[in-house]
Length: 440
Image 1 (cartoon, rainbow, N blue to C red):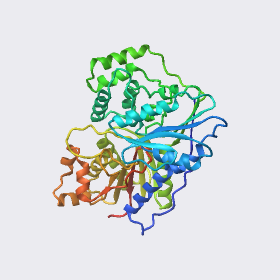
Image 2 (cartoon, rainbow, N blue to C red):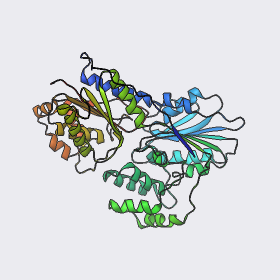
Image 3 (cartoon, one colour):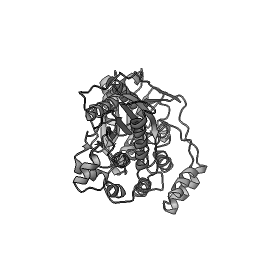
Image 4 (cartoon, rainbow, N blue to C red):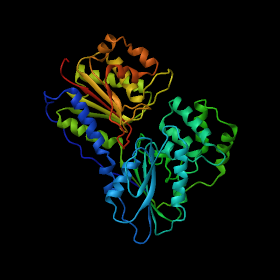
């Protein structure tokens, strides 16, 4: 298996931030630059393979970016093709030759299960002259769902919901999903027979391991059923005994080993988005600092750490002098304790605001690059130095909203939600903290 990724050239900062640009405009501009850098219409075409001389081309795929990836293929493909991709409800985009199916996310549903069965039918019976072009992006684990024999869809849904509520990181969630699936962990590649397979991946996972993105339907699984059992036990998730038996007995099943000649290309990542944002920040006269592209952990804890770093810049000019822009990506989690509304990005921001406690000159934006933060319609939100003052004037207590996991309602009352609609890409969380040199 060959795995490659593309690079973005990094530019140096200019000398000063233009006074005419408002902090909110800066944050919106760097977020727009980040999204543009990972737009499937831009990143897919350079990596398309040569069409087969005599065989068929079958396009399959799953994820929040799947429909736009399919559009990019259709617009740049010289030859016949057919296929089916599955994406989240509301994330579809029009294609002429590749069928786009919408299904449930983050909890799988019957539409996704039906799409998975149809995808397996499409690749069955292919020969060595044929090509399978597989388009994979984040969200595919829920969207491309086919429970292993002996497990029902509802049982798999219950495990999925339990892991979400416990705040399990995506790597652990996908480990369990792979071992309860009949199509993930390389099993889709196995169904393709002798056909050549090229998999294009837009990564939403920290570390960008393509075997983890959408649970790697065309990539051999190096994890074990015992690891899946350990994860379930760590979070105290109770599953039916026959599910545990399946995991125990699957240790003795033949390991799926897709053809090593299959090509896997990671074409867009959080790092690409962060570097594009940093380049835009430099154009605006900011000193960009990319903290990491793979930050995990509780969103509220990550918020407090970002607050501390921002104040270090503000107070001491360390590790850089302002005006500066802190950038980070990855995937935080939220352990649900309350009954409020909101995703991990608004929870991060509410914690960040609390940590800053109205500190002057610091602004921030945090959004999910797919345009949907959790299960709400917003991508994320914005905070300003006056956020907590404005909240108190409305009778909003930030600590109470944070304790109730109700950050969406907090920012909704303030009118500070960021709503982009589905972006049809997905490299996970995008966080930008702007530290100015002004006392505003």
